Length: 125
Image (cartoon, rainbow, N blue to C red):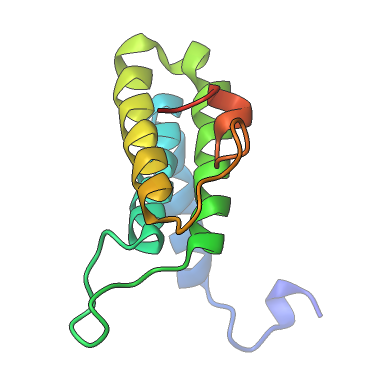
């Protein structure tokens, strides 16, 4: 079925999609990359257990946090030359803070070089 045959598809949908494309086209790559990093940092902070839940005391899922920190480390490392030192420095600082918080949350430490993101950032201590 093509778009013009779909009963829920309207000209308003087309206009909204075109507006979204214009909005994205106007945003700089540095802003998009930084925004993605901030979303990964926020999610990782929650999964590390840095956000408190009224019932249990905290939200924590270290397996999920490990994945998010690895993804963040890869993105920050790859993007740093593209976004410039000013932006990369604050992202690296946030990443390092998350890596340290993760290490503190573990009942047993990871082996050197095995902690989340360390394959991209090197040993964090």
